[in-house]
Image (tube, rainbow, N blue to C red; front, side, top):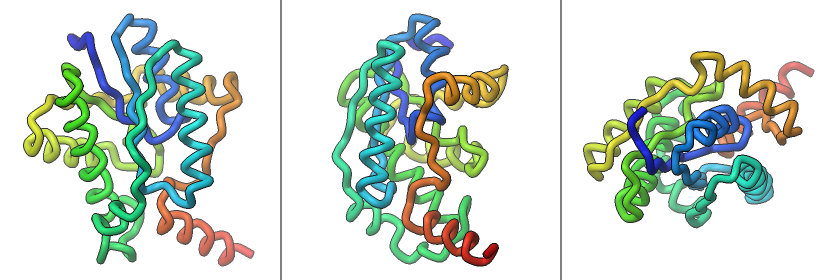
Length: 189
């Protein structure tokens, strides 16, 4: 890997747990950054944040949180409300969050940033990595594009979710993905 002081942008505990356990066992100096202004409603944000903090404590890792700014996120994705999951709205969302994380990494002298935003089966890892490259070009802090699903990590993630009794959400987090899930449920009735 080559990095000793690493910032990990995380969307939630279930997506991050295998990566965090792996990095902790390797002795990497890890701080998990929780910057997710996309999560809706605020009660959901609090659940996910608190669960992420609990996983960090369990693995003995530092936890950092940036302000919850849903109004900033709304402006960032304005006009993209009807985009499908994995569409342009997701690209804008990833870029916004990764750019902010890159700046945090730069300001706090991390060697690099990685993220677990592409771990969920609902997300496109290449889309995340493309947004990260754009953020890197904008801010200038290295991004470690690692596939946190490979090499047995997806199986480990599933086992840790069960072992740690992690709260596992059933939508990506934003109000548009929640509305799409609810519409799908209504259609199935």
